[in-house]
Image 1 (cartoon, rainbow, N blue to C red):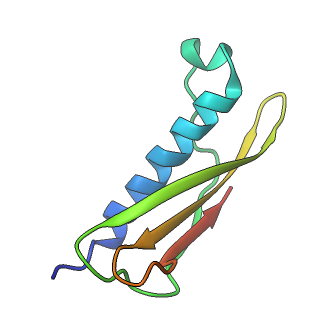
Image 2: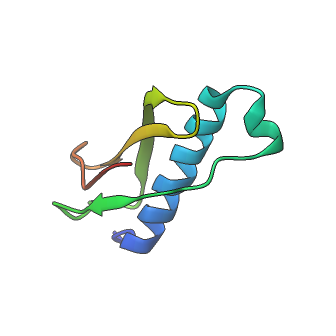
Length: 86
């Protein structure tokens, strides 16, 4: 059983948030894909198992910024080894 590297988890989080922001941003995001402006990641626990699952929830769509909260859960305990908001 391998533990996913924290940097790989952060890359997954960023990609998941970008996809959610693009979906919520409407047609303008096709010409100008969203870019991460601010990213804070906390790893209160390590992930258990070989896989993690990332999800993203759009909290606010503004004129220039889209606020997204992301969660990562592990496959073993279903807990949140990482949670972010931006």
